[in-house]
Length: 477
View: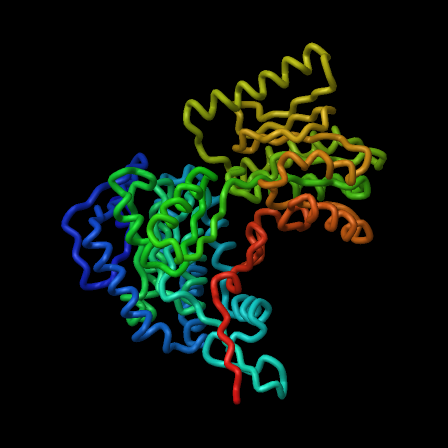
């Protein structure tokens, strides 16, 4: 690899030809993308629909699982050419450090190995054979049932975490749906690389996948979006609430009766530390720091703050200090990526405001921060108000008398809650989980695993596979 990268961030089914391209530039990395017209996109969709009918719909689920597993196995090998390209270019594109990219890609692919996907299919559908034909619904009832995926799925990707498009390609193929993916301007590479791997393994998939880009939400893209959404049976959109709403409105204009829309908008997460967990201060602070550091706090599973219970063997402020020490250690192992001037100024401002409060003694505030710059910041403050983080490894620690007292403070954030990491004895987990679930939280997991969700986890409360299919009943005479 050279110091400069000129790469294609798209995949088009043959024999589609593009004559006009644009480039997205990320410092030394330049990503070439096709400039689509309404006519070209219609041709692409014709290819996708025909291939789904002629090939993909006739494949067994086991055969598709074998193809996906082969692609994932390649990406788990450090020497794989596609993975090497991703590792070399993604730091420049995403701003994540090379070490973070390597770890993120590995974790992503480990979650999509064959045994994991088989388990997800069986859990969500009852039996993966439901995707291949009619099966008994109830023994002896002479009622049969099967699951059918959409002929075509259009997915609009967010770009905050690399690799989201790979999971969408996998999910679409599992339900035997051709897939049109619009990549994000923030990360337009990995999905195309993974699509090429799938096609290398099974050339007949060449006509079932398309990875493209257009300037979302722009007037000049209106006709393209209406064609894409109007000819899809399922549209999946991820991004800001405004972006998801814009897709929703376009879907309604394109074809009122169809397609179905699954939207993933803005979400926030938090951590809760029980007093008992403070007995092993080093372990719990290490786990919490890892949750903060992963992806530089850019994902919907990244904790914005931690509520720490009082009355334990250690004080919540000791936890804050220990987490700062662990973030300092992680800065050597998984360094934070660079930030732009505006972000740096915002991080400095938030730290400075907290330091002024600490110096003035206006309220109980203690700041623990990196010696140079704003590589990480932990703000301990007695005020229990839920406050969003500016991210990039900036996190607040707030003492609380009882973890159950956190629940009322989540009410204002109910529509946006995603995950809660908990460090507490197992005997306390169920009541906490019940309360958090009612408060709007979708995923509850141990601290230290917030950024490592299992494949197929119910993002925004939706199932990975089952929410993509429709059920067909056959009542025998």
